[in-house]
Image 1 (cartoon, rainbow, N blue to C red):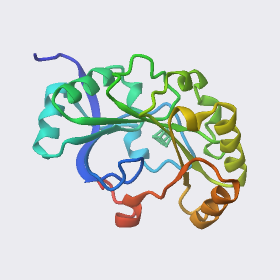
Image 2 (image 1 turned 90 degrees about the vertical axis):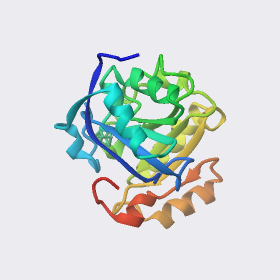
Image 3 (image 1 turned 180 degrees about the vertical axis):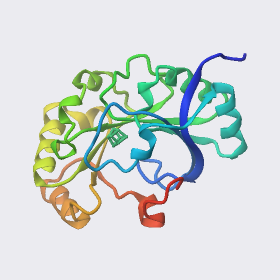
Length: 216
Ligand code: SF4
């Protein structure tokens, strides 16, 4: 069935997944344009504007041409474009395994239950902590993931408090990651170990491999 919905797309490319529980897996990334947030440490500011308006069928064709079953829809903030939901379902119906990287500032209600949602809750160091939509936590499924990108000890204490208050580790996989160039990775690893936190420490693998190269 042909669809008339179009989305503004910043880029579509194949790379190695650098984050989440599928880290290391060859993945096609569909990066949608636009984001209502402005995190201090954002590394995809080029996706705030521009891109091409593509139909869902055109996106499916470009994804298929890259020859991988794993697909990650990211941004920007992909849910800022309502047709993102239709895109996710179309990718799943085409036989892909699909994850969604979202800021947690837009409701995930109505998300296709087959999508693995990776929700990036914003710590104070991002400058956008007041945008977290806390109701979203009620809608997490066991296969979803919550990510905290932490700039300093204040962010770490904040994340630890959120983790405990919301019983997050019982609801989803929780990921703690340091802001590159701000929080030394080994220090964050030591804090997690000292507190025996039930979280997964991670570094952005794609940055270790390729730095800030766009399309990687
Ligand atoms: S939500 Fe993501 S894309 Fe938007 S400003 Fe923050 S880091 Fe950048």
